[in-house]
Length: 146
Image (cartoon, rainbow, N blue to C red; front, top):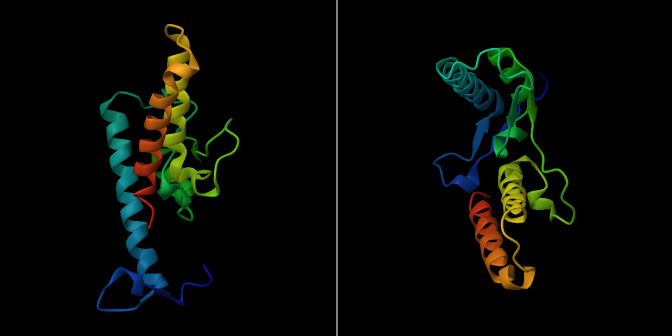
């Protein structure tokens, strides 16, 4: 765990302090991440899904970028865990290629498959609706970025 002695700059968060020891931040986050996955394990048990998820869990969202999150999740949940990245889509801008936007991109892909399986509508007749929905989703997703 080299590097835990350095400080992290938190001046952009408008706090009374500008630096926080990395070790302190690590200890706080480690406890919270462990707590969250214990709650997830409890929900899996309540839903009677223990042993019924052979493919495991896919972590989506910006927390998927947290160092060591897969290891903690696997340890607590006792099942396969991976971080989800958007797949099968080309031309994404860098900001939405990572796990932070994987759920949004996946929802768009899923929605487009539903549209294709429904009644045939011309692309021209739906272009405005598609742009509007996609634009709203991207704007919402971007609102979560710092």
